[in-house]
Amino acid sequence: FPVTITLVLCVALLIPSTTIVAVHKEPAPYTQKELECLAKNIYFESRNQPKKGQYAVAFVTVNRVNDHRFHNSVCDVVYAKKRVNNKYVCQFSWVCEGNKRVRDSKAYQKALYIAHNVLTSYEEITDPTHGSLFFHTKKVNPRWRNAFRHIVTIGDHIFYKPLS
Image (cartoon, rainbow, N blue to C red; front, side, top):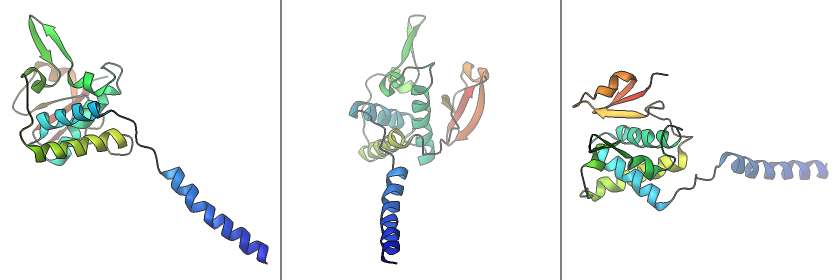
């Protein structure tokens, strides 16, 4: 009888710690620079959008990092641009608008928080864009939009995936 109780207690003590270790994942590593690049992209592209819209911009950015058609670092994706007809075309409009400064520290702190969440929990958080790689505001109608499939509209942004 005492052996049974001891065995049950030992098993009971082992299960919780094993469960905690199995469920808890270490955060994905990222650099301070990547955090800041993602936070700036969230801030400049969507600080006036609802929280879901800010998460959506973060996910598009990280979705691109994880897609072989784009650069494989957050900062390279955010600052990607190419020269077309002697003019630079940027993936995110604020990058081509020149030296932008953060003027709303509260909005930037929120962007940092969202960036951290997405960078550390990308696999666990539901992507509100369902894997989208592109977006634009409702105010513009870029020519490229017809080459992509509309996925969702969140706030003032329309999100797209490639057709194939």
